[in-house]
Image 1 (cartoon, helix red, strand yellow):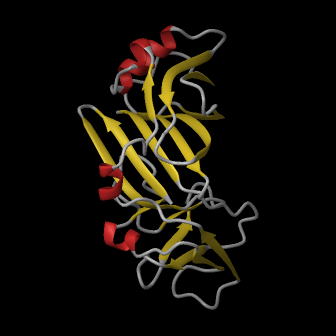
Image 2: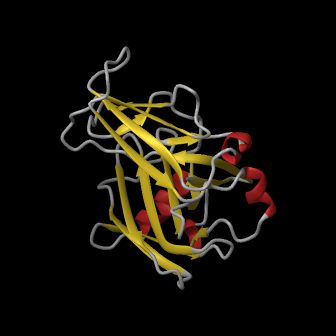
Length: 238
């Protein structure tokens, strides 16, 4: 269950729904379908990534600033229909449609649904905050890369940032992720961050040569609460 907001130049986009982070390390299955309260009658279909067939992605990706291959957005009405302790069934298949019977089925129970967009907008302290520090506080990809590579030491790039923990949810864990994707360089790093903290720095191996001038990236701060719900804020570089 995910409440998500993206920070871009002069705009904030907020969505809600379910984020399916599913892997098949042995590459046994070809597709999967998730069914349960609030989801479409036929369920949500997942297929394998073409370049990495151990990772599942949405058969019909969303149109979002990021997470579009795994984040199934839902209407407020659909979210509100999900009861507490709702079971969701994950059915795994050996083929793409048309399918035979599933090879395997698993059930996950979610203690509470995510907030609707209306509920999140009316409440305070739902989302974590995140802001890159210094000259990295830009939404322009080329400026971010140029400034970060200008401060590289030992081939490592540093992304310092400030953050706050949501106060409106019973948060039990916080993580952050920094990712970069361009035609010449891609990398990502994830770390845990303390709930009581206000700042941190992520480091990753940088590119050799000149800085990429086009691409995308983000700093994503996620908070997980006692009911396994996630709220996240992504600062976007575009």
